[in-house]
Image 1 (cartoon, rainbow, N blue to C red):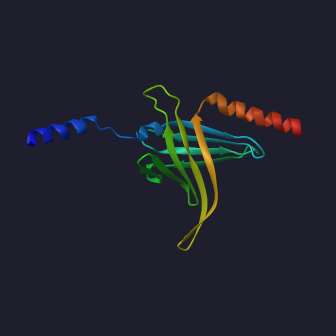
Image 2: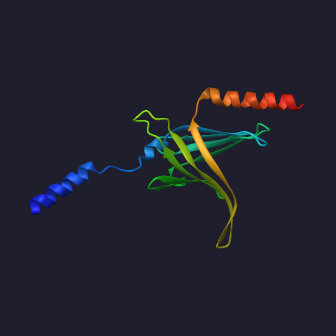
Image 3: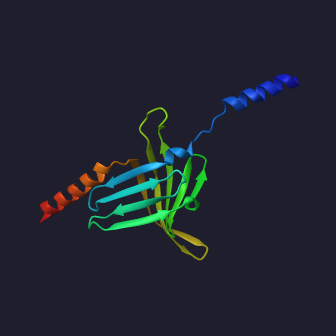
Length: 152
């Protein structure tokens, strides 16, 4: 009976795999928002989970926030990235590089204030980041410039 239990536990431990591989977060990611306020967001996550977040506004202003692994809280299936005192991103990866599927980072940004012991939510924005390419940011800037020229 002990042998059967031992082999059963051994078999289960070999067949068990992690449900979520956090290394799929590593890479360069981008997100566009068209409409009244055009924005381009770029997120780079390095192998050591440090990185940078950039946002380009319609007025071509660029905001850059650098972060380290200490700014990331890992959970099973998702991470919480604290970018600033009042800005957090909740992200989860979709797809797998190993199987060749397109990967995406999906999630939500949370903008809030802290007053004493109370957290007050100001806004949330759904996020969908795709793999970044150098050509994408150039085409985004050109599209914004073309739309500005049309409105003159």
